[in-house]
Length: 252
Ligand code: 13P
Image (cartoon, rainbow, N blue to C red; front, side, top):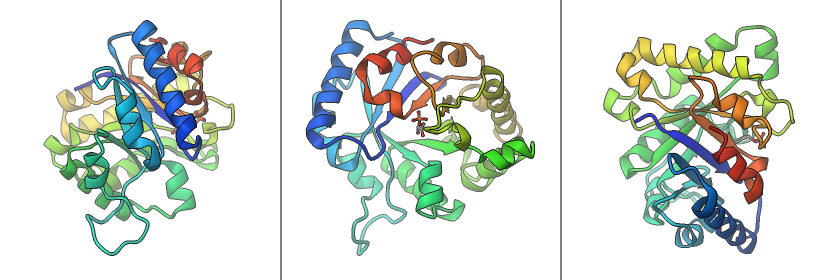
């Protein structure tokens, strides 16, 4: 179901104690000031998930892992499976983030396995796509992102695809302070929705939440979220301060 969603991606930031404090601050400010029609998600490090789930009001705030293993279980030292994530009380998992694709070699083949396991465990994947600067400059970004989706999530059944949240994150905008313009975001989101329509039909495309990520902050969220195909944001740096995060949540 298409929803307004603002998800924080804390990345590799905060100790457990700092994370609990941040979760408490977000919980309080969302309870007091948060728009009730916005789904709020906190994407925390694995080590924090159990405590963050305990800390926040589950009726207002969901919790996400930032990754899960490509295998269900077994001798894979250091890995955390989708079932393990689900058993903590988390309900989302961020998959396909460009940092994982770039620094940890996550291919479409690996992501296929992760998405399937996440869905099987009952987690909602927040699935990331987005192009590098060179691709944007070559003006092949629309085809590139479509191809990313074709290789990773367009092979799902319609019933499974309906459970996916998509996040468009242009790599050149992540952590750089350079945001996609409102028009660039809308154009790509419309491109993604058209690709979903072509593959799964208009009803499923209209029902899919497509989030924008990349230097989205308290100042620019309103303009980005005003676009008809932008259903919210996946927020890195600005999700680490409750006062900034709440302004983004209330940016619709
Ligand atoms: P920033 O908001 O820090 O640019 O990060 C975006 C992001 O990668 C969220 O997943």
